[in-house]
Length: 272
View (cartoon, rainbow, N blue to C red):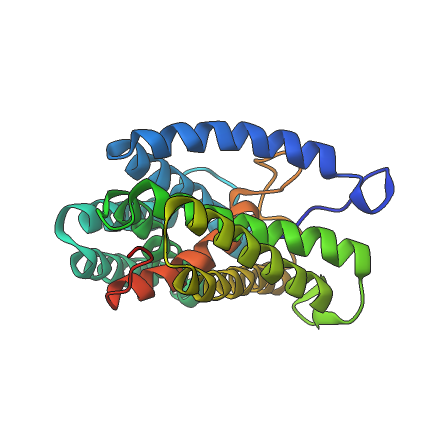
């Protein structure tokens, strides 16, 4: 997750606003996750539409809420989410591929970015209701994923700003450091082991997967940073006070979902 510039108060000047926004978001998300079913699918669809609007805005420079290409992007991704829930991941992936092809045909000059966004964001977010409805994973699996990604983000935020040091990938994200990346992995591992111990998951599996999800979440963060750098944008939007845009908040979650989705498709399980 890419934080906006710190205000007054030094290295942690934006912390209060970030915490308040996070609490408000956590309340809404917690309610939806607890309810499950259509609630989770609607929340995943809404987040996807907002992220695609931000991507469209960055790539095209068009901040309008409705354009033909944006409608096609949003409809394709939301359809992919619902088809995944109704007919499975293969049918959902096929729906996303068809939608991405339509988007590419409508915007040939930006096809790779916009169609790629439909596939990258749509596939990941389609897995949110899959996790919630999976009898092996359910609410615990989705909470675990969120906690691991959040821990990787929080650990990177505090360790990076506290210790600084060599940059992780300065050409893409000049503020991210190796100390932040390592701190994020350590906290993600600790949170995963604690959560796994409480609910009775295999700790060796939880440990390995937490590192995979944490690394993938940091990769998702870097992917978004690369997109923003390519198009000269500092924040995806200003929809969330203290965090920037929805994509700024969920970039790591999208990356982590990709890892967990592929693991689940291959038949893995955390429990047992």
